Length: 459
Image 1: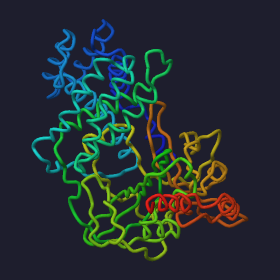
Image 2: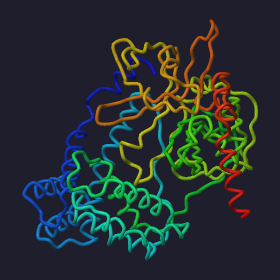
Image 3: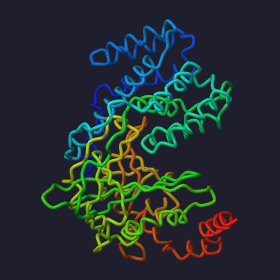
């Protein structure tokens, strides 16, 4: 990315973004106290939401929903209409920001194609709306352990159905967060936007049938740009961003996501051992190699449904050469309707010729915040490495404070030699002698836990 492109990206000419987000914030704040008895402030927030979608197909159902909520006639249909209006506003913000990225960087993107789905959602999914409705009526301040536990049977039933796993996992995590915070009546700070996101997303998912995620099978070369590691106390997910080359087709930007459950004692470089079933993928990450794919499923959102037996690590490929030569011309996939939210923006970019000053990357007079606090401990990327870098592949992201970049790989001089430090360099084990020595002293936590689990199963 050049200085002129960064300047165009940070141009505040995108109209309506702030106004749309203010309406969403007003609605989210209204949910805090619940809709059992609607105050004047809540009525104003609901009216603003209805006004924001007045020129859309949602105008009539949302206006009717607001009228009924104001009179106390609250049901799943009314709450679903409000959730849809909220999602539509965030979708519009997402589209405006992504359009700004494409305009600034000269990128192209596919249009969304509707994916076939079953006409009717599962009765189990429909049943989840009742609890979500109770949650909205009580509001976050009204959440207690009894209200949260009322969802237990619903979540358990959803988890037993593979086709409903997306909704089930969302509700499982949501109820766990609420349970950990309950009772919430006197809590000083609440994650208002996050909980509203989870509530609205769950409600909208309950209306959807079973989707067909894989729309084509592809054979070709996957060139890795970088890897983003998401680590939680009980789970880890690795998202690999890359470029897909297929004969007779334009280069496309794709993503691979693999995950595993874990315990909180497994952290740092040890998390890669949990993903050992994906040996070809890990080899390509650690050794900076191309992946040769054969009939790999690819979804309409550009996500490769990873099957390691359909991949083979091939020749060496420098991610910075890939980013320089192929990234500018690569076509992006469109986001799925429910993923059209600013929080999901993650655009791979290449920066060169910059300086890192006070936690920001600076090109000429233009600056963008660098997310050094989010660097995972599972690889060699550190704040020191980022500050001393001369080139960076990162994910361009957006939040209420503006644009930021999350480093995925950097180039820096080590003892006078330009070296690439990639977030996946330790996928086959730490290459830093000090880290490897520390890990060997602390023991192999994964092996110990597996041995204990095996012992328990034998009993």
